[in-house]
Image (tube, rainbow over all chains, first blue to last red; front, side, top):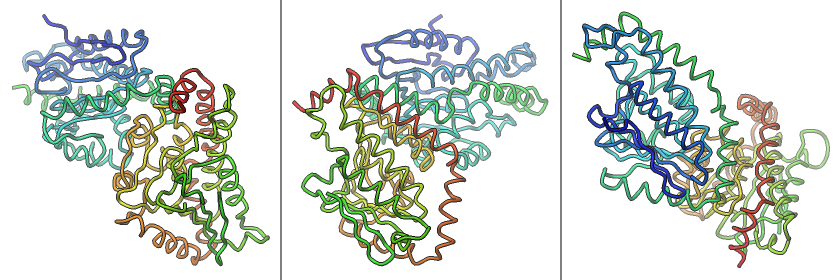
Length: 256
Length: 253
């Protein structure tokens, strides 16, 4: 089996790739574990100034792997009632760890970034995508609660817009994501994404690494990005809602 | 290099160094701080001032610090430290001022010049004005702006703009909330800003004073002094380091 996440380090630039293209890079416990291992390495990697997070294939990350948050085995679920909670807590910890990396993080949203996948993008210091990508938080559509990602969206676009996005549900185009501040740079087409990302990455890599790290650290302090308890409470809350009969019924129907 | 002109109830503070695109010196920042702090609501000559208009002569509002002044300073970088401390004081003084502060931002507000916008209550810029914080490439942190930008335009925009050296235009500044009134050309900036300052000066003193103070409280002003001090420390601690020295030396070569 190929690795579910890969990390390449090339001098000051690292690329962290979510690598489960046949499942549109949906997050499983195993994949999040692979991402944690990559972050272990990034925490140790001296000299990395900027890390690009992206996905293999057409999608950036389609969100949670439904098979791991449906519990009932006869509906195609895992049969493990604790699995959703583990998955959500692992995502929560991962988001804080990525945010607290000393390097600048760019989310290169190559395609669909849905739910937790869009949340992961919002953890980055800069989000770049193309106009036709699909981004959003359709959790409430399924009776779920996007509690782990909510703190990151609030920090990214502010409390008012975050409430509007999270409570409205659904998905939006990359162009729209640019208008509301989820995406910072929006290329006209997918074909432009590599060149546009390279330009952004070159700018960061040319900056003074100490100045960049000190500024990022200050921003993390000021916007309370290090508050791990908040996302872990979010994970608990989200897991509680996932376990409800209504949510499980919706999810099982979606799996069929 | 800085002029104070009181015209009735509006005090204009004018950067007058157009040949250097109003690049900031420690004396200009000290003059700005003094002219703003002198505006009080108590008795005294300056109590007549009801609004402040900060502007710059020439094609640009302000190009940031005059780095040439720091060139021969040696490793202790006293001028750079004075500029950073003066900038932080200036932004804090504008926020603490009981009267509204309007900035006429024509052409460009870059680095320390853009940081000043964070202290104003009302910023008018032209659509094509060049804005931004391109200092991390010099090994300097734009940290001084961080607390005020987070309050003014949100944490996401602050993160986006402070870590990236890319300049953005007045229209983008307006979308993110850093610019509050956008005009088409740079020649329209000053008349519009003067009009805004005059209008604000004509309002009921009590209502204006209370509204400004309360808006700051709602933005978390109680914690702001501590946050600003922490931010200034971040900038100061980098300036005398190897990274800033090497990168600045390359600029001066």
